[in-house]
Amino acid sequence: MEHRRRLRSGIAALAALFFLPVVACATETRDLDARIAAHLGSLRQQLDPRVVEALDRIDGLGRRLLAARSYLRARSSIAERWSWSQQQIDRYAGSPLQRALDAEIAQVRAVFEAENPGYTLWVNPQVRSVEQQIERWNDNASVAAAADSMLATLRSRVVAADAPPIGTRAARDWFAEALRTAAPDPTPTLAAPGLSRHGRMQAVDFQVQRGDRIIAGTSRNDVERVWEAQGWCERLVFAVRTASNRFEGPLVNPNEPWHYEYRPETGVVASLQAAPAVSAPRTVTASGNRTPWPCRSPWESTRRSLCLRHGPVRTWPG
Image 1 (cartoon, rainbow, N blue to C red):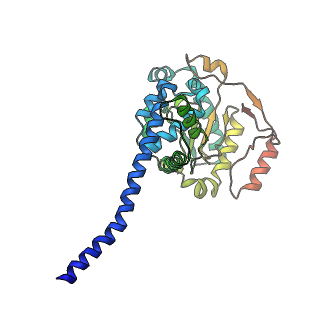
Image 2 (cartoon, rainbow, N blue to C red; image 1 turned 135 degrees about the vertical axis):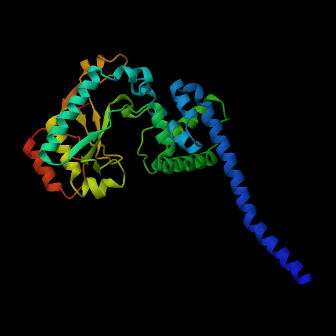
């Protein structure tokens, strides 16, 4: 009996040695997260009301911090970048702005189909509302990974820094700077809710389709395996450059060969009340500062020959 009692005591002691640090660590993490949440809450009075509303609907502290970082970095342009309201979306339907975009897409599609018989391009014609952006933000794997990184960074900074008392002007300035300068890894594949260019139809995602089947879609898994290895990136670039001077892309960071920003004429934009301001396009040649062919694939020689054959890379909006 004595042997069993000693054995049980020993097991209990070992368990305590193992679990007590775990419990202490969990408690410390909760305390840190509570402090971070309090710092974030103190920033609300400095943020646009639309930003505050979006943050309240984002799941998890890490995702909210990641979004807040974007909002702070875009603070000076929030008004001109914020996604359309439902009323603005309703006005967009059938407007000159929509017709102009549809016409540009049709021109790109026509060139693409002529160059790639049997294949076509599909573009989602719907404006991506703030509600949809929040849903995607709360469910996206890259956002989740970046949010974890963001939260870990803020925890370390709160521990290391002699932060001012929460709620003071000094604390708000310190925390805002900590958010702005954080560098989450990986880079999320979505813009923070409200800041997506799809929310103002300033961006489109081209997908390659054959019949009813999507050949090259918008999955991260398709970038190297399909878009680059099979040459669809270059084929799409060629069609866009040949058919239109109103698209800029594809997106390089993160690498999304399907994503192009749309720059309509200023006059067309003005036809939709409260639509975003757009700068005038400027011409950039292949020797300019901006890389005109960002796709990475075995088609390197083809890409260069196309660039040389077609001379200036149409026009690139500023």
